[in-house]
Length: 198
Image (cartoon, rainbow, N blue to C red; front, side, top):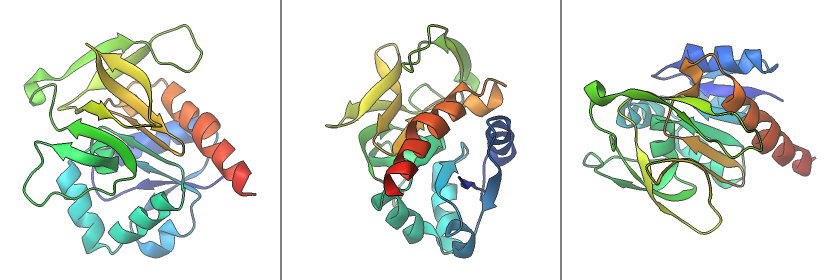
C-alpha cells in the first residue's frame, strides 16, 4: 500500500513519522504525478484555506476531489477534517473544500490558539484504553449525515468520524507519539477498501 501525505503546509513530517511507525512507506505529495502513485492520502493539520489555495496553485485540487469521489481512502486531521467536510461554518469568504464527507464542521470551534488543550478521550475502535488528543484551533462536527459514524466526541461534539473510505479527526494524533489513529486508518479504512478494489 502506498500512502501519501499532502505536503503543501502543516505538520507533514509528524504524519510521515507516524505512518512509518505503522509499517508503511509514505510519500510526500505536491504534484499530480505524485498523487497518481499513491493508493491512500493523509491531509495534515495546518491552515485549511492555505492548503486549499496551495493545492490549486500546484494543480492537484480537482485531482484530489476526483480521487475522493472515486473512493480513494483518505484521512484528514484538524484542517484535514475541514477540507473533507461538505459544509463549513465560520468559513473564510470563498473558502473551498475537497468535500466527500457528509458533515457540517465549524472552524476554530474550540477557540483560538491560546485555547488549545489536550484530553484523553474514548475512541470507538474496540480498544478499552483512551486516546490522547491534542486540539489546536480545532474544529468540531455540528451535523453528521447519513452513513457517517461518530468514533469520538468531546462535550457531545463529534471529533472523530468515518464514512466508508473517508476518516477525519479534529485533533492531532501525529503529535502524541501514539500511532493508534494512523493504524486505524491503515488497517480499518484503507486496507479493506483497497482489498475490495482488487
